[in-house]
Image (cartoon, rainbow, N blue to C red):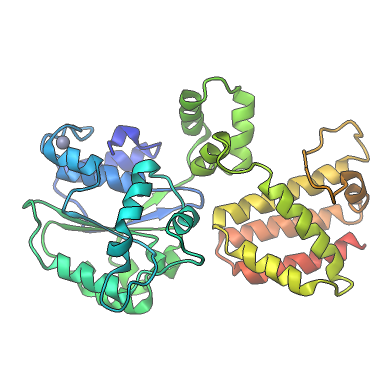
Amino acid sequence: MLFINVLGHNAIKEILIKEVSNSRIPHAQLFNEDSGVSSLPMALAFSMYLFCENKSLSDSCGTCASCKKMLKLVHPDIHFFFPSKSAGSIKSGSKESFPEFQKQLLNNPYFTESEWYVSNGMKKSGEIRVSDARVINKIANLKSYEGGFKIFIIWHAEKMNTEASNKLLKNIEEPNSNTIFILITKSANLLLPTIKSRLQTKVFKKLTIDTLKERINQLYPELHDEYINAKIEALDHNYNNIIQQLSGLIEPHNNYNMFVEWVRLCFLSIKKQQISDLVEWCNNSASLEKSKQLDFIKTSLELFRCGYLLKYHPGIRLPEINSANFNFGKFAQRIKSNNIIELAKLLNDAFYSLERHANSKILFLDLSFSIGKLLHK
Ligand SMILES: [Zn+2]
């Protein structure tokens, strides 16, 4: 991937290029992402730039032998490690799953953790295990194939278990020359402190409206600015989700259906009915990708607000909820001036806590009981 094809984060591009031209490349870097951001494309562009035999001061050439290998992700000196299924105690799960990972990466370098699990046929989240760390150490101690850099990209580094982290420590502390580690995570607090302290951090903030708008305009010139702005806002600047939704790959009403089921279970929880269904709902929701959980909370807040406003503005445009068991008018009767402020506060607080890595399972369950109580107020 060329730098020019990486969306936004121009300041980071400039720093990376400058570090290369000044030959001051940190050997172990942390790409620390905000929720809904993917820095994997930047890691790819940076790697291609390091390998490029004919780079300019702004980008890789895109045509030399190394660039060609990078564009197909077959360069022998780049190694990807990521959460995967176990491949036994000897084999590296990442190496075994690499063909599928490579396919995903070539198809859409912005793909998410949950999309990865689905494509790799995984029912639950994967791990980066000690068998992966062993392979990393082995490769790190060999010479690079092409005589240049050797790059390790560790995607979702927070999924490295303690044993794997401990095994990698020495190589991250004192790597061989021309060896670069790039650890990518949204949860740097979950990395082993001894590893984290060795990493030079680059922070990837949410993409700006202007950056996203420019790209969406290129892809979908027929869409109006107002519609694009609303999508960016509703999907919390998450490029992958926006594109998936615009291309019809994900059902836009997923959150609504989830909401209908949730509100019903919250309501019943006060009568101690269907509690096991509620617990299951919470567990399932907690296993979604964090950005989807946040997106759901935002949608819920919007629906409660709409429910409250309906009394005062009967002509208000209601969300299109296509659920046979849901009547927005009836739902709205439960949202009154004696509970809307508390409802909004609960959801805002939940959003804030989720963003700061609260335990989602507990948070959703607490939230559900509190909302259930307020709906009966
Ligand atoms: Zn090149």
